[in-house]
Image 1 (tube, rainbow, N blue to C red):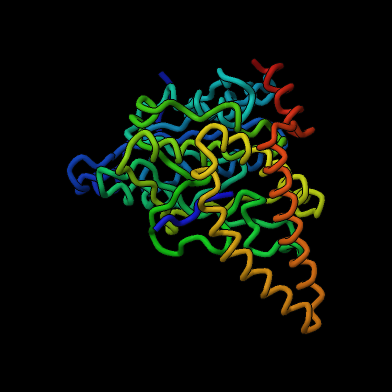
Image 2: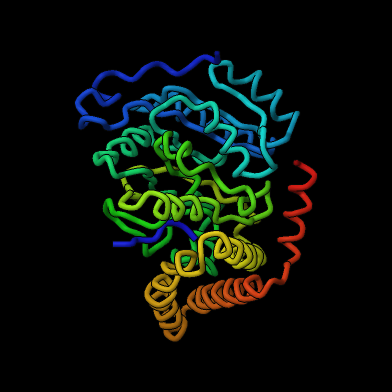
Length: 348
């Protein structure tokens, strides 16, 4: 689940003084490296669109780094297509965490920003992210990911469940706020933080299309645990548009993604402790999901069939995630978990 409120290579042109932050507070970061991770040629059009959008930023990145996750065909294609981008092969385990860590290792900006290969940023995305580093205690900043549906929002996917497709969900802050964790498709971190606490944990990250996750959540929690007094900030003005594939609009994906969330959350609890792993989820369930369920049941009672479908989506998501979290905490291994471990072994 996403953020929840807590109360040698050629480089892009240098930013102008106004964009690069000449008037920023003393000690505020001014340069930013952007890391994009990609694993399949199926998203080639999205990769091209994302790189084009990065080249038009009002705060130009110091460098763009495209990390290819163990796909030689895509690696060759990207190197040929993007001569002004640093294109690298994932030097770590297969998966999003290893790819991001590969990008961080070569990044030289004050801040490292992360963008998914199927996300397109608004032109002021980096400008808005960097503006939120207005306090030395701010260690990470992320923003909004708006879903781009293939046709329309499916009836079983109310906005409270948009995290299932990697997007900002109803219930997240609508103004700049401190949060527990951010989304990897739209987040940034001060570069020195990685030197101090390490990179993304590769045992909980996603692998290709296998929807295990929570690596960003674990990383943000680790910031709070290792650097007391630090802040993780959600800036809604920093916007990316995240494409949702037709397969992710199916009810079967809701079930499988909820399954994976429960498995991943159990793994994260073993790393950071059950309280930190689930503290914000308790608020999400008791307030956000409860309100959404009441609303959708009301729609159904008033004769809107879509309300019943949305209510079924909420109940299925909650029940499936909770079941697999409990099962994972008891030490059982799910099929998704076993496949992920096998794939990691092959990529190691």
